[in-house]
Image: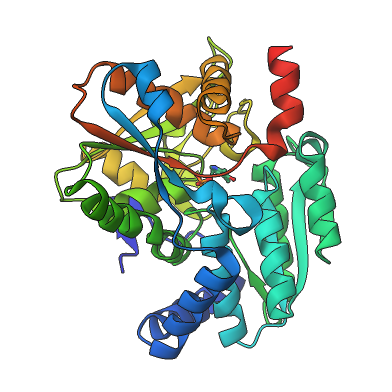
Length: 385
Ligand SMILES: *Cc1c(COP(=O)(O)O)cnc(C)c1O
């Protein structure tokens, strides 16, 4: 498993964290080869999580596009409502394997916090979740869910009071409590081995897309689309399809029109953030820039290092979609298919529909519907009312 992706990745952390990262790397490498671990991962993925998630033909969205068929990979049907489950379960089991009784996590939209609180409850681990004060306001229902699942939610009032600052707070906690605590990082970002571990646990999405496409329409799709925040659902979707000839498209948050939003790959430059070298949205002085997006889950100035390398080596194309267009796509999916999508994958669906219009009816596009939209209703009603 690579420590670097081209020039990207690595591990830029204080000395105190080095042993914990090595312990985690060791636990994960032995777990990967341990049939008992894999059996438990598989058992809980299906009986607690609801895997495999369906590949759904979006007939009415396809009609709207009047071109290629659009299929949705239904990660929104997973337990706790998003792909975050896959990683929370995997890392929760690793924490158990390392004998650590306490989980900490950061959360932006609250989805990762909910997934961590859920797995903490299911595995009997004490759970504390750092969340930016602004995100706590925007994502109230998820704060309530975490608390009801028995986790403590710790408001972060420093900096921009969003995800970036919550990660800093979680890292500080980890440095102090590293012997008893596993930091359950929520996306394919951070120092090695996190990007590799998270991609590994999320790759179940792409493996299922591969198998389900072959079974359902006899071959792989022409194009696969996923939204990119830190990049975990996208890397999990893309990695099993790299080198198969399938075209891959990652969609970042463009924010309000005229802004750079949170589009680190489309509008950022290489730099170091949260222990890893990758693309970072920066101002002209090289400071981490403020981000803006209608979706809290994409509102992050960095991106996983593997995406940086996939971008530079042109194996995946990345573009940004603005808030307004993501909101339009939200309503299309709701009204056409009877599904309330999260605002994060609504960005991907907008891009997919634009692609579908340019492609022949016989070609197929799969979009990862990374989560459900219940958490976003207040934002959507404000944005369109
Ligand atoms: C957290 C979240 C994202 C963004 O995170 P990635 O690590 O980029 O996948 C996307 N969609 C949903 C539904 C989320 O909850």
